[in-house]
Image 1 (cartoon, rainbow, N blue to C red):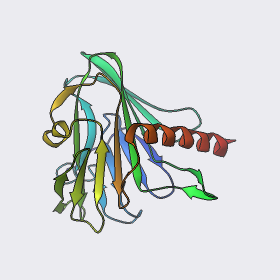
Image 2: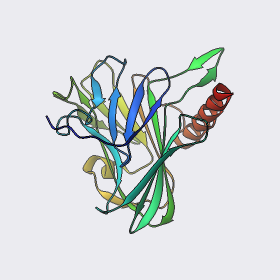
Image 3: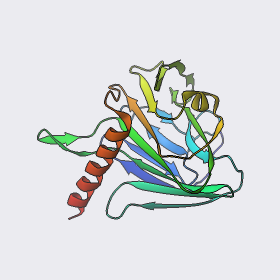
Image 4: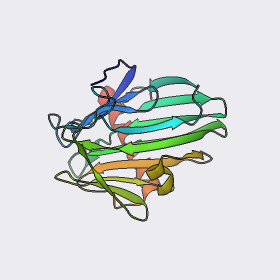
Length: 209
């Protein structure tokens, strides 16, 4: 077992929490409960911890990480020789139908900021504390990861071949990645992600007040 220390930010919605490294890699996330096995756990084991990252293709880069003011919405900016981009990570939480909506849903928004950054997306959730490799099923706009009690699904507008093969591609427009456990995202991807982001930011602003 290989252990490392990392600078990390924390996101959560009172249903789950995730630790995000300054290189955009998810270092810790347990589903469906806080005391469940991790699905991403490189904080404990680099080899068996799985991976969910949006790293630059260039090996050398600078990075900064910060929260949107008065929220639990985490931003990681990557500055590489070919361009700069931002990953916005959050766990949706907001009032809906007289209760708080806090699904097992992790949303990542990836925006180019300057130049023509080349990025590489990896998504390899694990089960049973890294002992179980999940099988993958590809559909039109999502990848299902199978082998746990419920399905983990990654819904994205990135061409799935790039994700499955972990190939570099030019980030020339905003991309979204929505990871779910159990109930998947059935609504339109881009508009729903933006709506959930606005509502989550508004929730945190009200909470802070």
